[in-house]
Each structure stands twice: as structure tokens, then as C-alpha cells.
Image 1 (tube, rainbow, N blue to C red):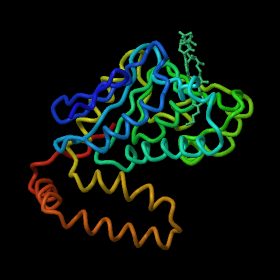
Image 2 (image 1 turned 90 degrees about the horizontal axis):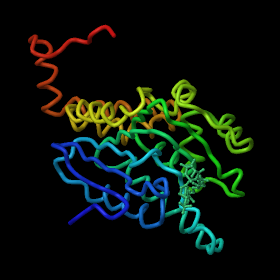
Image 3 (image 1 turned 60 degrees about the horizontal axis):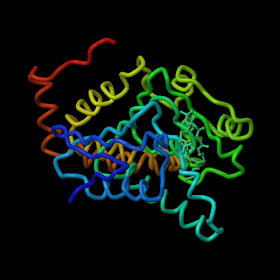
Image 4 (image 1 turned 180 degrees about the vertical axis):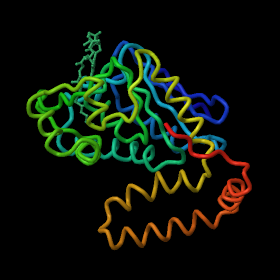
Length: 259
Ligand code: 1HE
């Protein structure tokens, strides 16, 4: 089954899935069909994939919702539309592999919602972040009100939407939009390098980081401690974990290097 369409390109490079939005003339605006394609990719990820990178063709990562499709929607259709984004981005966030977003240019509106669902964000210094929904008379609908405050806090998101504030790449990294800030044009390479590193982890460790950690972080402490104990006992029982610990104890595994 081909997971590529005219608007999105999918390929495996070794065990890394590379997903590229390929709608640069529309600044990679997310049409309904593009959102459906993202969902399809994560529901049909090849078994050998260990991690994924997502980026965008052209000068911008993503201009958000395709505004040309919003005109005719009534309230009920709007509800289903928003829920379709939620499903697609949940398939990504709680999907089969960790996803590294390579950001550049505009990361705005639904583009920021897409980036926020990824596990790691690498931004080059052309990146800027905005939530123009406020000035378009609408509200976020792709999970942004849940995920973005977890990155930068409710008050900063409120400010972005109320005042149209745009954060540049440096401030965006400082606030927590991106975990990495890299020179112009190098976000994909850095994201790919990180994805390769992530893919060498024990699969259960990546699973715990994607599926358990965000849920534990939302649990009351008492429940979180219990979930953590369950997850860590499952992870450490895996033969691969035993082998990795043995490798370290017998001097075959790398030490932590001072950064
Ligand atoms: C679009 C879109 C779009 C560009 N939907 N067509 N998002 C926004 O409100 C952001 C709107 N876009 C922009 O502010 C700018 O386009 C950019 C800053 C991203 C890029 O600027 P620039 O000068 O490079 O490009 P451009 O000339 O503005 O756009 C090129 C073309 O892309 C143009 O179409 P053309 O036919 O005249 O060539 C634009 O109309 C088109 N285009 N962005 C449709 N977003 C789940 S809810 C999420 C809610 C939201 O995401 S709301 C925020 C939507």
C-alpha cells in the first residue's frame, strides 16, 4: 500500500520513516485529506520502523488548517472536523514510533498543533510560532488547547491567541516549543540523527516514553508512582534490558559522557 499522496511523501530510510508535507504552494496547509493521510501513515507504519521524522517542503513547516475548507462547515460538521484531527494526531502521539518534527519557517495554527503532538521538536533559526486562530475569529481545534499549554503554559498560549503574538526561533526554544535549535537549513539532518539514536533504544523504553510518561505526568502523584512502578518493572523484565545492563557491567556499553 502506498502511503504517499500528492500532498504528503512517505519513505523508509533504513529503519527511519520520513514523512514530508509536500504542499509548498499552500505553505503545507492541512486539508482534510492531508489530515487523513497523516492518520493513515501512523496506522500503517511499517513494522521495521524504529522512529519517524516529519518535515515540510518549501520555506515553511506548516501554515495550519487549510482555511479554504472552513467556509461551508456548520457547527456539527465543525465538531466532526475537530475530532478527525484529534484522532489523527493521537495516532501520531500514541502511535507505533517516536516522532521527531523538523521545523522551519511558519509553524502556525494547526501546524503548531501538529508539531506539538510530536515527541521531539527540532527548529532551525528561521522558525516562528503563532496561533492566528484568534485573529481569524476561530479557536484551536486540533488538540492545541490540550497540548500547547503543556509546552508553554496557559498564560502564554492565551497571550498568543489574544494578541497575535509571534515567537521567534530563539524564544520558542527557550519557552519549550522546541527542544533543539539549529542553524538555518539543518533541522531535518538533526532530526534524522536524533531519530536514528532513538531507534537504538529498547522498544519497550520508547513505548514507555510515548505511552506511559505523558499519562503518568497527568495522574495524581500517588497513582503516578504506582503506574511508574508497573511500567518500570515491565521494562526491566525484558531480556533486552537485562542484556543492556549486563553489557554495561561487563564494560561493553558506553558511559554517560559529560556534555
Ligand atoms: C493558505 C494557508 C492556509 C497559506 N489555508 N491557504 N493559518 C493561518 O491563518 C496562517 C495563514 N498563512 C499565513 O499567514 C502565511 O501564508 C504564511 C506566514 C504561512 C506564509 O506566508 P507567505 O508569504 O510565504 O505565503 P502566502 O503568500 O501568504 O501564501 C501562499 C499561498 O498559500 C496563498 O495562496 P495563493 O493561491 O494566493 O498562492 C495562500 O492563500 C495559501 N495559504 N496559508 C489555505 N492556512 C484544527 S483547527 C486549526 C486552526 C488553524 O490552523 S487556523 C490558522 C490558519
